Length: 474
Image 1 (cartoon, rainbow, N blue to C red):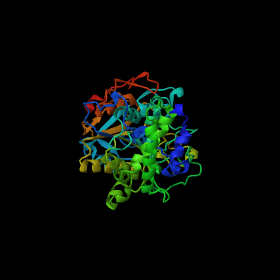
Image 2 (spheres, one colour; image 1 turned 135 degrees about the vertical axis):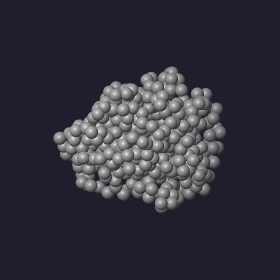
Image 3 (cartoon, rainbow, N blue to C red; image 1 turned 90 degrees about the vertical axis):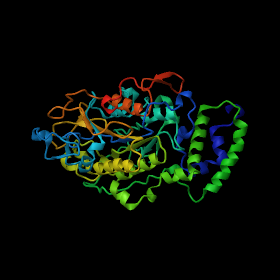
Image 4 (tube, rainbow, N blue to C red; image 1 turned 120 degrees about the vertical axis):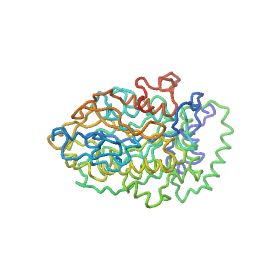
């Protein structure tokens, strides 16, 4: 296209820059375009059609949730009690009553382990399945980006959706929701836009902020103002198609391709009522909203269910660094965090208490709607917390041990995989890494994690360099 003098800015002018901005910045990206490579054909062998990744960035405490140690010294176990679950002989912390009732629907992984206590390195490892150095924080594609590349969009929805996609660990704040060497085409479609406070400084937070807060999760690219009705947008789209006819036979500039993809992806979603409705929680019955909890995490989990119900392939629920709550899970109890001791913190409605309610509601809702067998749900965090409570009443980073869970998507449930020692400090059974979790996820979708894809420069890259599917889940 560059051969006839059209610039990306000039093509933007076909709709006018102001109109494009009213469409919402066209942040969908080219992820709603059909995959162009033969490798994008859906592989066979996996039972899952969709994935919901419950991404709790910051390091959720495993001892105060899924792996309590009631016989440990008080400086380890603290003051919380353990409670029985629906699995005979299996106990969770008192913080998880709702998940305890549905433990038979879950596979709890208690031997999650790796060798890093660094937030950034561990989060990239968890989001990509690939071990990285500090120089590779933005080079490795997220799991959702690989899935978007291989399997493309689904039912008109982007191949990788993040709800809301605002987590920025730091300092300074880093956006780790990236497509890396796959190129911008496979970046996540983030519902939340840019965070209001990227550094999530807690210095001015309330001592006890309210848990009952809800997000506006309507994507900006689907929010039409009064000055841009759908009828007018349709006329402009037809006009643009006439220009497209004159350009199809020409070589395509990569920058122009990116602009085209953003325009067409947002336009397709704007003009499809079924898709616009999927992003609107207004249609949900009040009792459903209450079941999930009228919290940020509750609303995000409910949105994930709606998108999977509408046909989305990979949805990530993002909750961990928040402008209202600071670093939710990173409970050192440092002075600047405005946190109480961790075993009081976990009882707050925006902490483990709210997570318990939202996650249990999501699993039950998917099950009742007949969606659970085809939807793999995995709760992930980058690491656990230190077995010993620190002098300030918090727990610090602990890569050596943590707990996750899986359900749906054909995985075997009603079990606990792995075991930690008497203080939940390290696994005494086979440890499983973020690479193994990622391999499990790919396998559930029918993707050969040992296979290869071509990067944006057409160089072959291995999908996953280390890791294998967790055999107990097969």
